[in-house]
Image (cartoon, rainbow, N blue to C red; front, side):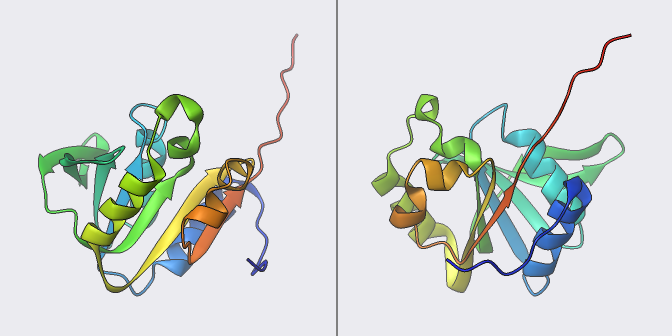
Length: 153
């Protein structure tokens, strides 16, 4: 894959995503429970003019709407996960998630609309480190790098 652009910070991460999904009507986020859910909520908020849903791992029965509520972006009612964009979150590629790549690819084929796109949303090159960039036909990978520090008084 070739580098399209660079960004800094969380806002740059969200803007890159929003630009890529600008023509989509619906986005289905797929991720590991707990760790990926808040990231899906954040990215769905950035593209809140789109319909969004979240699937836990490869469980199609878990598909829930991601919609704006008074408490912020939340998972709500069951929904059909068919979408223009399938956004895979990096937590899927972590060994502890135990995601079968063939099962994931089969699920993507079931839920992605014709001419849909697959986006990888990760940090610290998670998909590349796991070798998923060679297994999944990503149209885009948006990868952020976290650099932090802890300060003490």
